Length: 432
Image 1 (cartoon, rainbow, N blue to C red):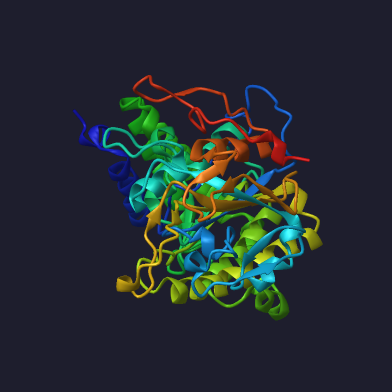
Image 2: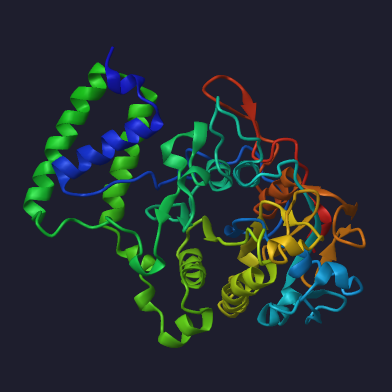
């Protein structure tokens, strides 16, 4: 049996990548989602007004009591954190988020999030896929599901882009490589390896393409395989992208210095600016990750540092999207794997532990009501008191904002049924 046909997805991906480098002088990667024709929704749903998603992931477990669920009457819980008012009546947040406070009239805070996963890897996996981590199957990430159910908007640009994200949280899982994200490390560098290598002339490039096409036809005639065909489609779409004039969407140098300064200079901040550019150019799902929220030790210093970059970038993104008329077409999500315990551990330099039983996430734009809180935790922020929202419910709400058929069942290669949010149900009262 041909060993390539027995290889797992990563091995096949490496094969295609190395072959492209050797024969074409270009680099290819699993970046392109399905087309509207191949992945059209089975039924139209009346949901939100979103066409795209900007998914801001706070990796490490953001402390909800220090950010979006403060307890001003509980000094033993708040420690060095103070609660401040915001532009939304009755919504208070931690004092590290002064610029975010000015846009909270556009934001819905969900203070009743709950997860069954209290470890980082498992919690992040559940948040990104709606399913628990298992060794026997790789579930598609949320961005991959959105492409499968909604299709791409732009015919040439990647439908799913992930900035600073872990590859294992941005993969297509059993949906295949064509639904994986285009991974970007530094927003300033844009989409790497998307142009013809300087040492390869256009004439030589065309000759190599012709040779590759001939080899592909011979291979496919001999080995009829769905995975091989999927990689051929990915390869052809990557070549199309190389010739697209819209690659400039990834070039932050197109932005003015004033706009770049509005967001801030950090990698997360510039990732948010890139996300806005990509939304404007028809990219369906963009994830930008900000790590460092695992504040077991020295919680207040850690939260202050993380909030400094988040605060400016998030406020700028909401403001900028509204200014360019894209906020109602874009769902801006702030998510994390779990919260932190209300107990402050002196022996850990005032650190906080993991708390999957209660945490906060944010939604803005895409038809979501702004300036409101949904759900509540108890007096200490330890457990959900009202209107519990599971990870699956949260992801179903994202699908609803996009009017995607979240009840659609997709069968895995092993003939097992899966849905974008498993058994989750959208919180429809958040829409107005």
